[in-house]
Image (cartoon, rainbow, N blue to C red):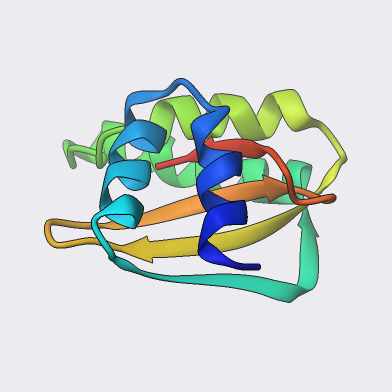
Amino acid sequence: MDRDALRSALSREVSASARAALAELEAGADYEVLLNQTASAQQLWDIWSWRHEVMLETGVTPRPGLAEAVAGLQAAGTARVYIATITGSQRRFTIFLSEDPTQCVACW
C-alpha cells in the first residue's frame, strides 16, 4: 500500500487520532501496512476493550483515541481488517483498515 492510498483511507476518518496520524503521514512519517494477513475486528475488539478496561481500572491513562478505536472495532463486527502503523515525531499510531483496505475502521 503506498502513502497516497493510506492518506486517502485516513482522510475519510473524522476522529482526532486519525487526523493526527494523517498529519504525521503528510509530514513524512514512516509507516507500515501489514497486507499479508487480516484479523477479525471482533477479536481485536475483545483484546483492546479488555486492555482499555484494565487501564481505566488501574489508573493508567490510555493514549488519546483508544476509546474511540475500541468503539470503531466493535462497530466493524466480524469484518476482517488490516493493521497499519505510523511512527510520528511524537507518537506511534495504530490504524485498522477495512479489508479492501480503502477505509479506516479505527485509529489510536
